[in-house]
Length: 284
Ligand SMILES: [Mg+2]
Image (spheres, rainbow, N blue to C red):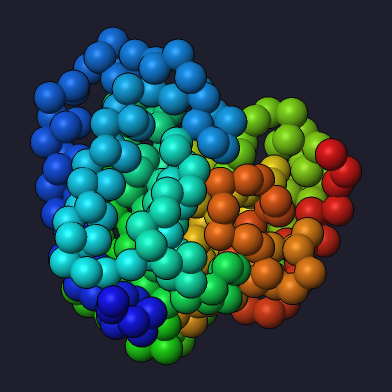
């Protein structure tokens, strides 16, 4: 049997790129909102209503994982729709959101992404490989633990810094889970800390914007799930940014699962991370 170490060292980039090709084909076959809005009638393990495109996208990724298993690799897959799938080794976790930003994908709004992370443990701190492909922007983001992060093959600059406007507020802050009720509950903090808001509608995509210092920070206004943030958070950290899941026992202690646990926050300085953390004090 292949060891844990060699499974994390498998050709994950190749797996992810083949999954992107498969997803692109699947999406091209259903280009309209009418086609993409068809629901399966069930909910994913994370609780969202499942679209046929979500389920088809997951099948494309799982076909690639079946192939890896046939090559002798062992792992456990955790996917948004089907939850945990046993591929023979609970010590290596492959965390998949086949389409992060399904509402955007359904409506044809740019920024929806395939997100895949590979971890040798159970929390965000254990992610060793990360991949996010944004189908709206045609951008490939990836990271390897302790080796760096890349956008379309070019290494991201870990020294990139945040920008603030003259009065000290951040220039651009990304928000996710932008339900007007949660925006309303956080509005005072948002007014105080930023000049402009951007709400892409994909946590993975929004984290990548912080990795490239296009956003000066981001936060989800509600609890995020491991499947949403696992890949993006490593990409941010390997690109010189900081990430926190403030409702967990440690900044990176959020579990790699499809269950919502904590908001996710990302920033490019410890000061901004702390500033954004103070906005996560609301109760459920
Ligand atoms: Mg999804």
